[in-house]
Length: 198
Image (cartoon, one colour):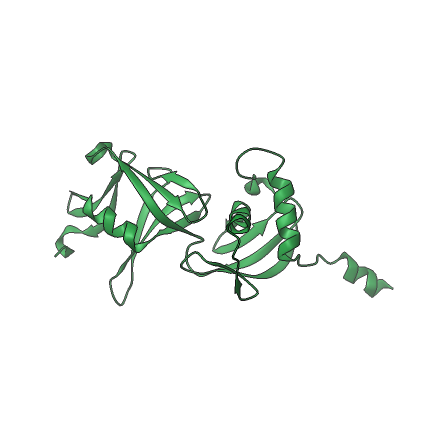
């Protein structure tokens, strides 16, 4: 009896359907993104869900083919340290993220030079303008030197800037104090040392 009670008190890892229902209910209570940073539910274990480097979401090894469902899950995504979770007011489950949780699939540039703004669109429909609160950063592969550019979306969640967008960004880059980089929101974001340019 005691063991049965202990097992019934243990949080159960929810299914993707149950989590989606909780996310819908949480999202219906207000406008905009759910306040996942304010919620502190019990950890319910890891869910067999993964976000691949190209932005594809998988559940139990199968791609999630419904964009609306992916968008819904993306609104309850939270990063704590180096770990990623889907969080509702009543549950918190761990998921796997191969690189960044989002991919910046396009951008619009307005203005030039120091007055330029770069507004990115992610694969899940977020729009974010790079600037002090949404910095661009570039990591270089230790072996190949190939750049991997990211833009901060919200609360520690980043988008990997896709290759076609990065090539377009390079075309509108600028040089400042020995660096080649990008202006947006009054901030210069370094991309590569000028000495390394061909």
